[in-house]
View (tube, rainbow, N blue to C red):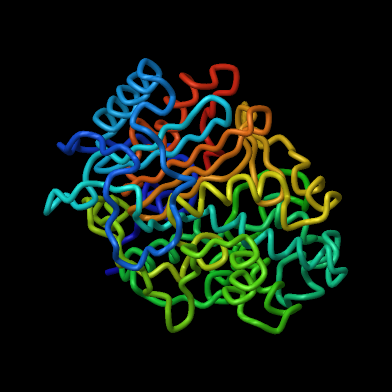
Length: 412
């Protein structure tokens, strides 16, 4: 007899932000922090990290000590195995640390040069590629999705804008019980975009287009198909050619097709309790085809440091298109608004990501031209909150008390 996943597990397979059901995570002992600038491992990292380098007391001894303690307290409290933090504040200094372990079995320390899965931060790349097509006049944000993808429920009324701003009214495929069972029964199963959408399309739409914010990975899968329809190329290739290369992100990639299992070294092991049993598992090598253009990408601290400003300031887009991207609408969650594949929380602009075993936050604060990147090798929640959000909040409460990153949209 098929085992039916619990509501907790159904919620757990979504990509980014906070699980609403509390989870207890076990604390993991770990070595002390390793300041940035320590010896880097060679492996295949060959780009220049000088602009990431940061003195051990880059924000001054007192402030740095406060940050060290805040990160350590959250990591211990939430049971986070390893965390990497990068904070750059022009004119004030910087703070770059890796603490804890990259591998609980061997005790290998976390490092600042690791690749990690970035989950829903993928959405910022997908939507950037889409908006470049808008700038070229090949599509319009107010085009109905039915013009490009057949079979979408109410697709003649749902626009590309509705999809990007999470107001399509479609049912999220990752909330479907059969999808949860199929994914968690075989985390290495390969899903096609159409298969993913089918899980959601069998349900009635949840609202009329444009009316209600519901964070929904189906929206981004559809935008991936639109990109492929318009360009005639695989979405992963389009994102690589149009976004990653112009932005000079040499260590950001989109595993897809025959390379869906790719995960460059060095990378930490990832730990999740998003399993049928609820037990913690090593999800490092789970294939992310189920997340595709909504959350399958991989990056590192260096690239995300650069990308935070690029996406928040619109370097790759026209000013008008960037203005539309940053037109933030209420999400229904106090302190957080959502634009086109990007959010604003406490003045910080960017996105977070969560995929089994890994979490990330990449945000930019325009008022201070500051950048914050947080990378973790777990997605196990603590009292109903994402561990990455807890770390980001603890840091911003200290360094930008007038601009506290609260919590990303609770999407699970």
